[in-house]
Length: 228
Image (cartoon, rainbow, N blue to C red; front, side, top):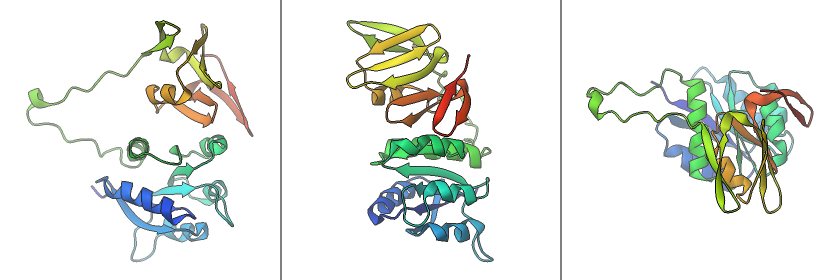
């Protein structure tokens, strides 16, 4: 199975070097090139008589001449995009334009790898691991997490993941808004983000994580959360 050809687009060479180093350690990725000029991306995506097209972009948002969001509007929908940025305020725009994921700088390898696994699922759905010859030696697939235990004062409170509508970060604590009411915890928004399944929850702002299936409408910079 051919690797996923990717292009790294950022106006800062150091940021390019970090993503390129991460991508080089992932067997199913092939870095086709890098550029600091967003206008070159359209040529890379289209391919050439001698080069295959690029399928995945690691795309910065704040760039001179053409922003990452503007560029996404010009791309073929088959081209997948992982946004990389130092600004949380653009997450909603990225989500509206079907970004695979939204990585906040500085990007850790763990977070990078989660994002590329999501891209792999979309671009190579048949890239599943081959069956293990000896079924007894196969590692069992863990059951999906259905709940969290949240620290509230001196006790742990069970919160069902499906009941969560969104999570709001405050200065010194976070509030989990559920169908049953609010749960306040001294855990940070980052700690909660790491615990929640990233296929279903997205940090759309520095202070908010939303449960994607619970979104009813998106209008400009406003998300409406509907009933379960």
